[in-house]
Image 1 (cartoon, rainbow, N blue to C red):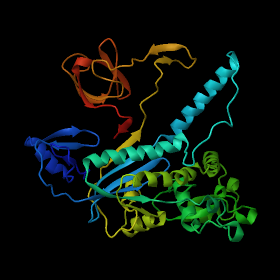
Image 2 (tube, rainbow, N blue to C red):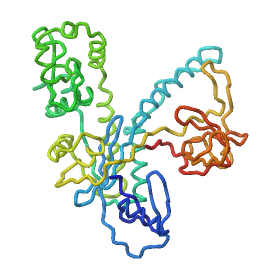
Image 3 (tube, rainbow, N blue to C red):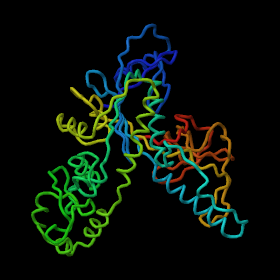
Image 4 (cartoon, helix red, strand yellow):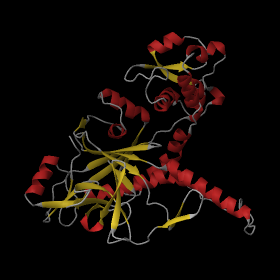
Length: 423
């Protein structure tokens, strides 16, 4: 079952989302038209006086790389859901690249400018651009969904990863004064870190046990860098063997386990840094905002025997009486940005390669999703893809990893670029 379809009247007042079959009838009968493709929205051709709408709860499960969003009715029906993929790492890499370019340019042959380190002040609520992006992207989608659905309240998972307990689960007394979250947080962090599968054999959907990579009997510690997940068979076979002896002859598995064990805690740190900023952004909408812990989310998902997914976790946020997954095919959104502002595109050596146009060409911009109806020639047929328009009146497409050049006269816009990729 696909997501329910958003519906607005002629005055753009949001109505109750409708079943896909009902939406198809409205389109076939001519009573409605397509208003927007992503997310899919229909607009009625007449206004509705005093519409009888029921309020929906927008539930959010924020994460470092993915954020789950679900719209849930008061009866617990999940009528619409999406998974939002962030691009925080790409922003960090771009800033580091710009830093290196400016530093090199300053030190090569240009005038010397004194470096500014201590003359800038940051406000108390300042977040790094890669972290602020996560908050702003979720806020953008909340504003967007409010235009198409009667949202009456918000629910956010306000989880805090206890990095002290993650590093040392046995911390206590005067060494540990931040609560007792490590019983859940350490296990949940390991599940995310090791992709919910055995670190040694890769088996999934079985009971996993916390395993010490270097056995405690041979000097191993309880730090998170020495812990992994293993199935019962692998855990019993390894026993107190050294990791190199247990994986003798499997150098690729050994290198992967050791490399993944030393992965940093940046994902947990990013969730900690942005959780209150996202909460404040939701409060600014003047709607009731409730919160839930990560333990509640996991308890609800296990209680209703639901699979692990970001959008399902979002539906399980907070106090939940019942849950019914009305939808199964969800909208997957990837943040891509609008591209750089640099008009002169260069090759890897820094030499000019081509010029990027500033204005649209024949009404099309790079990144627009269009439908091409080609009546004749090599590429006869109809297909939908993103276009890169050229000034000579043709546009480039990439279909099945092959470039195609189609005349712009054959194109019909489907969805203008908005900084996101959809699936």
